[in-house]
Image (cartoon, rainbow over all chains, first blue to last red; front, side, top):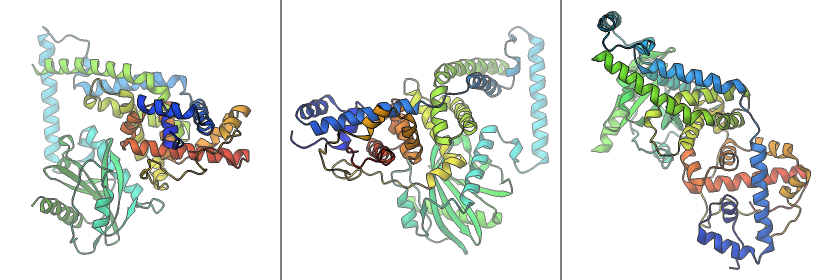
Length: 272
Length: 200
């Protein structure tokens, strides 16, 4: 083998990523090439030095204990409504069982009264997982409004924005050609919601900025169960067979709904 | 009956939580180290680790037993960082060309193939034992390059695991590692006033 080892091969060699066959070829070359041997040594030394220098920050001693307590309390909260009673035996304790039913009935009644009193679902009443999602969406939108945070792809052309996501997200979507009056596409970001990659589309309606988050459909976050409003922003959404979308903006809710309906129709048109 | 199901659910949840703690708590130090490198301060690093663990616990049901827990939780850490304000700001200031060229190289070699330099920055570094210089060089890396170096060299992950954490193809991992080491080398060269170096 006369050609020198490429930088990729040298990196793979230092990282132990060469297959046995590749390693044999590389070693054969290194036996006769002082230049590549020097470079391979350099790679190995750099890797070792980075490893040493990279182990720099130690977690505070109390952090692990604090996190352990947090995990315990979080898992207890999420376990069941009667979690606080864990440890007590319900078996054979008929009185306690009745008390449990009574408490459950009271909770159900209280929840029903609150729901009847307030027609629209409110932020404080939705489950914590959805609350976290809404907060995350709201944070993303606020971050996108910042002048110092330009979109990752800036274009009004849907044929530029949509292909930009190729290979970046594990799903695809369609963007409408015709938008409502005064609405325009500004660009998009690749972002993450709930740990999943999401297409963050940026629109404007007049001077109002709109964020539309598109992701694969997840039943646990039915968008029609999201609150209509959060932190002064209006929310709207839709689900199709494979996608779900949530839009957020301070624009008039009717105009926001018009935009989301247009985007929803585009998904349906794509399937035709 | 409903109460019994609550109790059963509580018991299952406790078992699941215990399994999660056994897997996650030994990784707190590693998570914190990477979080500190990314967030650049202890307070944000602690918040990042805490949020990561809570997200991971809540999503533990989706974790497939037998797969790589470390890669899974580091992916959550990374995604949590990316969606944080500092993460968003950092990623938006960086544009990376990840595609390897037809020869499998991420960037043209800075030096002719086979150039010999026995005064490489790495050797200089070892000679001077100047960890501070390397630390400064690492701090100058763009976040996508820094995280790949941390996962590869500090956490000792394989390319396949890194690809799973970063949710990118292995070729992109190789490309970023190559670029990261090249940039480290260049920074060290400048630091030591060297005018030659090895290939990336």
